[in-house]
Structures are given as C-alpha cells and as structure tokens.
Length: 245
Image (cartoon, rainbow, N blue to C red; front, side, top):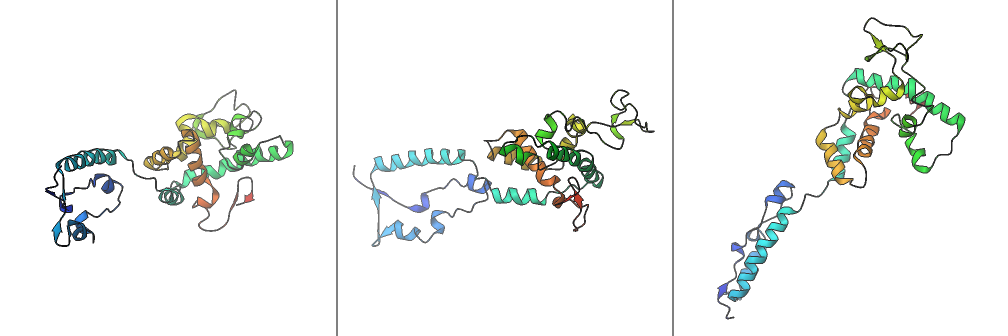
C-alpha cells in the first residue's frame, strides 16, 4: 500500500493501569527524549500504509489486554521487612509463648537429645522451633507433656487432669499438642492472628511450591522466635529450653 498516514508518537496510548497498581512509574512517549526524534526525520514526518496502521492498532489492543492481565511482581524484600517488623503485641500471649517453650519445647527437645532418633535433614530443621511438626505429630513428645499451670481456654478434664489442682475459673491442663494445635484456642492459631492476613496471602501466592500450612508455619516461626519478642526489652533472655538464642 501507499504510505500516507503520519506516524506520531503523541497518538500512542500506554495502558498504565497495571503500572499504577504495581506502583511502577512508566513515562508516556511524549515525556521521553525520543518523542521528537521519531515523530519527524529531517523535518519530514514518517508515513505508513493503511494496512500497517491497521495491524498496529490491532496489535496494540492485544498488547494492552495482555498487559492488563500481567500480575504485579512479588516484592520479596518488602515481605521480609514486614515479617521482621511483626511483633506479638499482646504481652499475655507473649508470656504464653515463653510458658509453652518452658513446659513443652524444652522437655521435648531434651527427650529428643536423649533418645537420638534417626532424623532426616528436613526433620532436623523442623525440631529447632516450638511449633515443630515432629514434636506435635510424633507420639511421646507434645502428647506426653502438659501446661504446668491451669489454662482457662481448656476446661478441667477429670481424666486428663486427674491428680492436678482445680482452680476457680475451671481451667484445665492441656497437653502440649492441644495447647499448640487445638483449633482457634491453640497457640498456633492465636499467633497467626498477630500477622496481617494480606501478608500471609501474598506470601502464599508467591510460595506456590509450599502448602498454606507450611507458609503459615514459616511466618509463625519468625514471629515466635525469642529475638522477635518484646519480653526481653532488648536484652538476652533464656528460653527454648533455657538455651540462649
């Protein structure tokens, strides 16, 4: 075809909706130093055939639709900073984490060291925190130890708590497995409630190779570590079985 349609960058429209959503600045063609360079050459405006102009308009429409479907990139650094900034703001809950470490994790880990079971690399990493799946799911560990003080969230059970003192509020002595995993009352669920749900969703969306439970555990592990807590007010305190961390 005969070229007779002027090429003008000022007529090109960018789809900036996704860049705005992803907080990325993309300059318009006329805002760059290339605008005048490509609008005219030797004081003459470039022209294109009708079929080329049609194909350009069609491809631009397809490109715009494709751009609109591209998700924002995951900012791993930002998520890491948000996790690091998360604290257990409830001092009662923070104290309960310390109690759980003393009554459950410390004895379970001591038993592990005495029995020395054959653990693979993943299990060796797992047993280094209070929410260990190995301690929770393996008989003889969290199912064998209990809270040393009555917990109101778990009513006194004559069978489970036989021989232990009954208190005025009716609280009982949950096993460590119950204490950690028991629905919304469990320590795990309440610690997870300290984390912004949108952060958990973003992390789960990025870590598609992990289950949601594994993603949640990784975040809980970070916020429940002694170095994250406000209990020590900046000083070292002993926990996780009286081991300085």
